Each structure stands twice: as structure tokens, then as C-alpha cells.
Image (cartoon, rainbow, N blue to C red; front, side, top):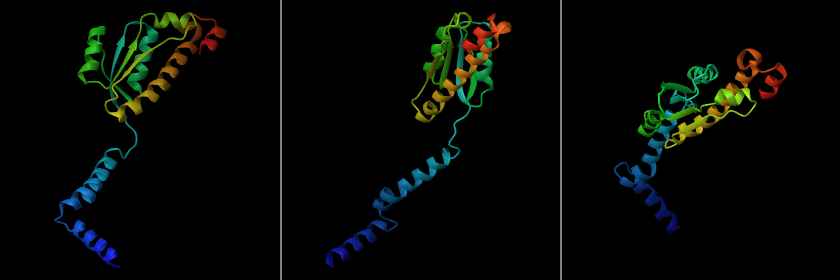
Amino acid sequence: MRLLELVRREIRAVCRLRSPFFYLMVGLPLVYTLLFGYVYKPAVVNRIPTAVYDADNTRISRIVIESYATADKFDVVSRPQSLQEFQEELRSGRVMNGVYIPPNFTRDMKLGKTPHLGVFVNATNLVYGNGALPAHEELAMSVTGKGAARGPDGLALPPKKAVETA
């Protein structure tokens, strides 16, 4: 009985509004939960600042850039003209993502090889990293499939080969 009374008295002492323990044990976690719960309320991160460097500079690579520019998930805020500018954009923190379209991107598609996109994600904030990677993968698959499906008029491929490539 004495132990139960002691526990009650301690709980009352901690819960007094002037007690620093109350603020540390109850108030701070409550504020943290409400604040970050409100910030991430939509559970979707859109308009992630993205830089796109096009080393191929062909019609197909411009389709890739257009796809990124029109996607809800990404906001193409920078189009660097050199690899050094691209690297500087990524290092500076002005963009959270980078997409590198390598030279010979279109040639690889025409030859039936798997075209590769370089995707760079600044994952210092995991919300951006976790939101961006699946979106990059989905967009890259749809873009490379879309480009390959254009067949004879887009890639000069016979229809059967275009379907296989897509």
C-alpha cells in the first residue's frame, strides 16, 4: 500500500505544470508529434527540385526531359550545360535530385540495348529520398518504354523489334 501511495505522489509531482520533467516527458514528445504529423500530413512529397543534364541532346532525350518536367513528383529547376555545372548543382543543395542522360542514350535504344539514366538523389532528408527513388524508377521505365514503342517513326525500328524493345 505504501508503494502505491509513493507512485501516485511521484506522478502528481511530475505532472505539475511548473515541473521541467512534465515538459520533457510529456510536452516535448506531444509537440514533436503534432508538428511533424502536420508537416507530413499529405503523406506525399511532390515538386522535388531536380536538375537534368542531357549529354545526348536528341529528340528521345528531350522526351525524357519533358516527362520529368510534366511529372507531379519532380520540378525541373535546372538544366546545366556541362557535367561540372551538373555536379555543382548537386553539391550545392539547390536541387534534391539529378538526372543524367548519357551520350549514346538514343543509340542504345535503337540497338535494342537497355538505355541507362543516371539518377542522383540527395537523401540527407529521407522523405525526399524515399519519395524520389520509386518515382525515378517508374518514370524511367515509362519513358524508355514510350520511346521504344514509337517504333519506325521514333527510332527507325521495325514494329516487331520496337515491341520487343518496349
